Length: 113
Length: 111
Image (cartoon, rainbow over all chains, first blue to last red; front, side, top):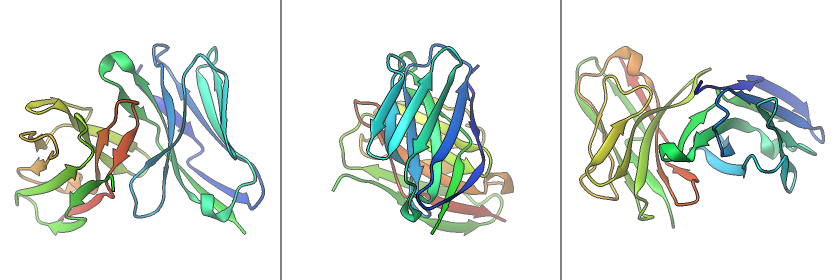
């Protein structure tokens, strides 16, 4: 019930291509869905986040698509660049549990020049 | 500069030798938390603290202790480390928007 399942585990994309990472959740009460980006040797940092009252949120080349009925959300990285190579984590939380974030398993993205 | 500072960044120890990983934040955040990161398992919460003297278990608390005597500090204590606690550990604090700020991580190896 509290799980967030993320796929794929790893992804290789050519420069300029679109990177897509998917997450699925079970608990319909989740109301906050952030994505975190982690570079090697660093801690994760918030990239973009969405709440379930909207179906899409875009910030620059990064877009979250949210499908409430399917209990799925995804991160799209347009015009992927080598500098986007990192590990990406999706997460979900319940505000009534003090905002505890449940993280997905992570996706290691490599963008080839 | 707003930051979460963890020490040590790297540590190799032996089974049973008590160790403490320190964590300090300078953002006056009330909420702090510890996570461990393992390949294929993502980030799993060990313990969290809603404020000074208020701590609670996360999803994987076995073998760990924490304390929160001051708002800025949240140390993680391994009383008797075992090899299955070999992992990458992250401390984080949270601002009111829900955004977590992570430290740079502490890589622990228990032989």
